Image 1 (cartoon, rainbow, N blue to C red):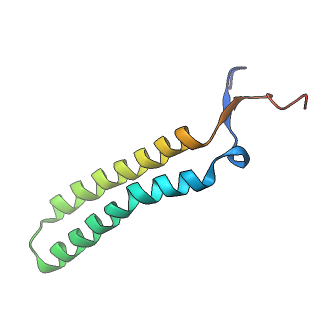
Image 2: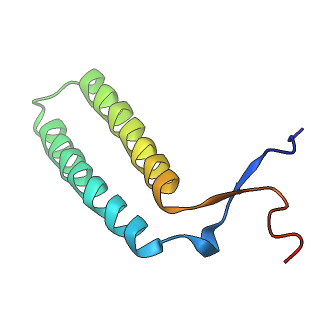
Length: 85
């Protein structure tokens, strides 16, 4: 159950340009990492275990980037904030 002080993200009030720029800047290098990993795996120069570790690490990084960008560019309001407007 949610309390009275629950915060709700307001996507319609977000600075979407900055959000997309920030996420793009931080996620683009991860695509290159995964592409290189794929090539190395296909060449047989990296183990399945190393691939698994790299994918898990990259996944955590992606989630972190998205979470951080949302916290920075998507405002949050107390539930019911706009109720009386």
